[in-house]
Image (cartoon, rainbow, N blue to C red; front, top):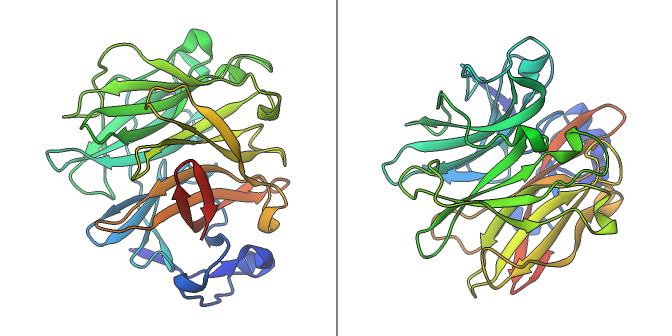
Length: 328
């Protein structure tokens, strides 16, 4: 069963979005990000498969779905699928009614054997105030995904691990980027962004030790960096998108950094999105995708009502030239 959601609303018309009024806009005419799935579809990821765009999002507290799934055939009209991509959680996940809502930041990629691989973060049963990163697989992009018995990354003594995303380099090396969730131990703790090379056949088995690619030591970070997402441009530049600050405040932002090497060092390039831009509140969690044979970079991220604790998904087309990033 599908729950149709046809929302074509510019950010400057958020009232219309909240009330569900459709406003048709051809993608080619869009010059700013648009709200497309809500009212709560946080930490969205993006993957193109079988002629459609799919997005996966953090669980909404009080809802039964651990991982939400949205789909669009044209990157304009989106529908929320009436299913849970990860219906069964593994034993390492804390699963009380409250803690089960802490399934965060899913990301999907296809393995060489055709299976789809889902990364997700969930509260750990041995330390329920902290998260680990898990993995799951499915032959269907929308699921259901079957979880691995053990987590990929935990680092519980450092606060846990969250926000894993995939990166497949041009040399067929695969990586998982993630955040050490130090701020779960208290303000001012390290929250480094990590890069772990993984087995290219499954995207899970680690190869060697992880490396730090960015730290939260810049005053502009507001004490936190998180939600890493890596791409490689056509000219060989590595772009790291990340979020800074506290996600439930208006100090949350999307920024980017660049490097000539996948492992860094990464040079901070600037803030791409902040509260007030295009009428946004607390934008964050950007993911980038490209269709098969496509030249445009498609982006999704969340922003929302800080006071109401909801975060809708927004979409945009981005232009990346070298280390410069802008909206089309």
